[in-house]
Amino acid sequence: MRTTRRGSGGITAAPKGLLGDDEVRRLAHEFAQTVAFIRSRRTVEPLAIHIQYPKLPAALTEAIVARSLARGAITLPGVRVSAVAPGGATADLVLSTDVGELRVEVKATSRGWTAFNPKDLTADFVVWLDVDLDFLSTLRARTIVIPKLGALGYLAADRLTTQALRKAHGAHIVEQDLDLDWLMRA
Image 1 (cartoon, rainbow, N blue to C red):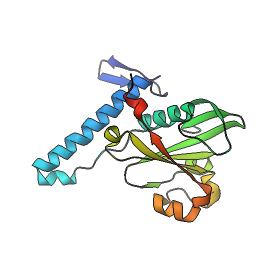
Image 2: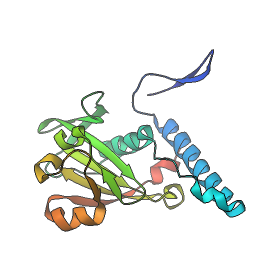
Image 3: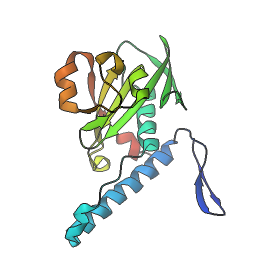
């Protein structure tokens, strides 16, 4: 679990780890508030259209995917997950499974496209969380599980849309709707 503490310079983050359920809820709420603020500014000031929405925080999306894998809400083809841990320098997440230790990279987008990095290409699975910026009001997301992305011929920095991935590799990916109701439960 990651916690924050007050230092002489304000609030500092503790060492990297997976967020706890309460921290996931709080960070998701803060993200939603930030998106709402930008939207409200765009209705008042036309120039605010040039202010970009924030990226989904990696700490948030990795925790959502980790908890969803642990709960069985996201499944990996041919694999039964028994434990999920932060991956540190080797991967976003490391899974203990019935077929051994597996490395998972988490991609999260709200626009339907992503770019890959070298770790994505060597991971056992990439879990792409595709959400609407209003995911807290819908409590829904779409996941795309991609086994052995590097074996599909992609290179680091390749940009890919969800439609292009489906068209080129539909038989090799698993798409799942993800229910995020648990985010709102205390």
